[in-house]
Length: 164
Image (tube, rainbow, N blue to C red; front, side, top):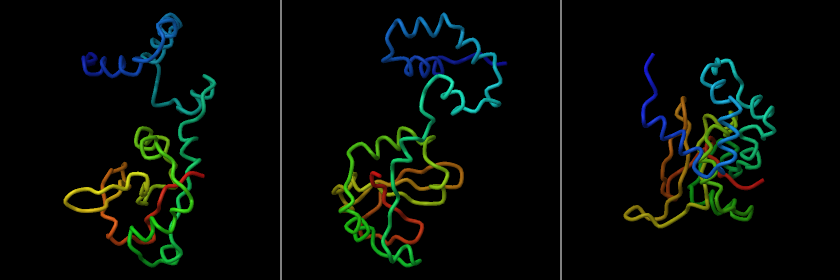
């Protein structure tokens, strides 16, 4: 078996970066790290583990996000991304929605797989392409993050993320 690398140790330290000293000491003295090291992690359901610790299951916040599209798209047609963004603008936007989903991709519901999700809060003038918006696209194995021009066409599998 290979030993842990310094990069792996740095990732563990980064997770604990903002954690109070007393809490880190309690975690070390509890033996939980040793249990995690020795246990069969493949056999553990992470959400069940989080419930035991009194934490919300992963993805719970992502369930507070609605995916919306235009009627033309819902009927199988197409429109421009810009038109789709304007049509849903009345639903409001929440700062940090894109950052939250990007930082917690494991919490994205499985129902989102196969879709492209656009985040209106990220719309900006992106030289030399003009107005663009950030999106996430399911590639069959994980999420790809991209930038799309608002003049591009969107179809039935394209949605805008808005607060629930």
